[in-house]
Image: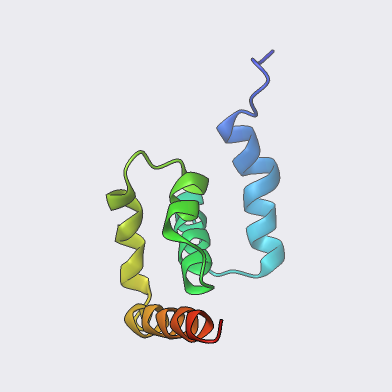
Length: 92
């Protein structure tokens, strides 16, 4: 009997490893790998850093900022967003 949580070993044997095999992966990604990929994909897609922080449950925005290294053109994206905002405010 458990407290309602799925035991880690059961999850790995019955869910995780079969899913990796079905995907045809030749490596075993960890949950941490998926968490990192999720955050990186959100940020790359333009998600707000604060929203990603909240999704990941980070106490500090500085922790979430570590994911920014995966965005080589983050500066360019920020400048484009600023330009869009400025162009909207000058057309009103």
